[in-house]
Picture 1 (spheres, rainbow, N blue to C red):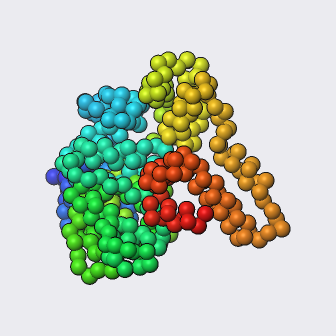
Picture 2 (cartoon, rainbow, N blue to C red; picture 1 turned 45 degrees about the vertical axis):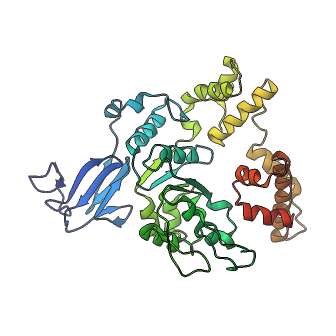
Picture 3 (cartoon, rainbow, N blue to C red; picture 1 turned 180 degrees about the vertical axis):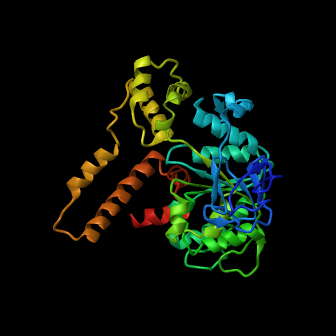
Length: 390
């Protein structure tokens, strides 16, 4: 118990802190806090709270006093996973990854909502699948939806389903992602891209466990364990009015922050050797490992894996500049025609990219549209629309 009174376990001598202000205890998902009827309130990220579970490495404000909750690294060493060099398909023995393993181990069997944050390529979907596989609903469906790849006009139907004739192209009744994942886990990747008008509907479904298909009035049960992920700052989106604050706090029961590869270079050698072994490459020379350890890896683990694949095929590392932002900027600069208005030129570049990307995608998948949808992360209905417009 934390407060200003002499009977508090942690005494905070400040006039804005009540004698018995807040109760704090460990929970499997992090740190559980309960406001004890304090006069000046308990706040998390500027939001007054009564009862919630904080993720580790969080700050709480009691009155005007800030408290930080940090994991004790020495204590975490006693967790079995904390000494491991891997957790499922996650690899690495750096302190940052051992911290992630400790959180994942404590979440095993849990069904709380989890927000996974981190840069593109850090393994957010890998973490989501591990959370599902080691939960109480592991035998039930795992459904992944990339919110950033959904056609804005079809987001509601993709998530919540639709009735036949509800809109042009709705030729049959169709369950959405929530119904498909009912009883299991729904993973919403790039949740920050979800249109603002859809967010209150999502919040209501999470609260009630009932979903209504587009074009219907009846509600259907759809209880899911929700895992969301983003490479954007939801706090910033909330401040900008582009993401609902109530939905943000509904998602933020537990946060898992994945470190970028540049912050865990000690793991690169292990990752390279593991990726190479998957491709039946038994030995990677030390100089190749050293080159990998020196690169910036803006695409993180995904970029490293693709580079190892290229090494296995070519026998040498591809040029670090290939596919880099600098090369892309150079190519775009050559296409700039200042005699055209900005909007017109932008549309031309986007159309050219879409055409080239779809051609490469269909060539890579041999024309298999379902596989193309999986590889690209584009909903199949939206992919078909893009292919028709090509």
